Amino acid sequence: MKVHYETAGDGELVVLSNSIGSNLRMWEPQVKPLVDNGFRVVRYDTRGHGQSPVPPGPYSIADLGRDVVELLDTFGVESAHFVGLSLGGMTGAWLGQHAPSRIRSLALTFTSVKPGNVDMWTGRAKQVRAEGMATIAEGSIGRWFTRDWIDANPELAEELRQMTATTPAEGYASCCEAIAGLDLTAGLGTITAPTLVISGADDAALPPSHGQVIADGIPGAKFEVIDHAAHLGSYEQAGKFTELLLDHLKGAR
Ligand SMILES: O=C(O)CC1=CCC(=O)O1
Image (cartoon, rainbow, N blue to C red):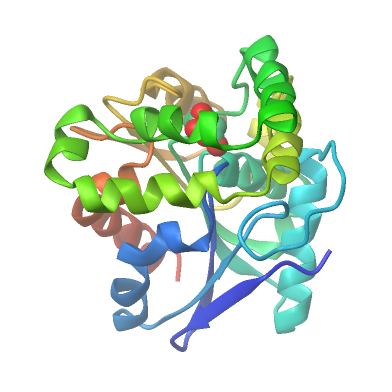
């Protein structure tokens, strides 16, 4: 499936993959620093999100991974650096296992290869199909950011809440179904791409124990935990996140 994307800059391709309930705008803090450091940024909307198509679900993580392979084909490149947050990180873990020749390096951030809570994810899918996105949006902001950040950045928090509220319900629900029951643990040892794993110390949705499992499973993976970061730590602690990411990408050039 052809997903919607935006590009900026020149150099080696870095693909940025969003979390559930967001879209490519979530990477706003990272675009300029990556471009200034000589990378070509390709950020895309995961299917069912933003301006990408919304085929009827359920989706699987393989569907989301194959969309990325098609995106790389669109650019005519054999491989690219891949950076995913949360659902995007799950897509990256699938790519590292199933399309290794297409992945130059991986940054798997605020994510998990076995998120658990199957009933919660299937229940959330059912809820948004029945009631729409409004009821979900408030809860998302509470998981994405610490209370201190929300209080200090009310306008930005409202903008990001709107991003979730305007996500197509069928797309969100179908991605919940891709997360429910996911388990990519067994294949971690087959990943050969240089990998950085980042978790947030205050991420109650996918705490650092999930990142630790990924880092322990991938040969040579580096693991970092960012303080004062909940689930969308790329935004809340953009400076630290981008610094770690640039170090990793420059090392994998
Ligand atoms: O529930 C959330 O919004 C947190 C989350 C878990 C997986 C994901 O992509 O987002």
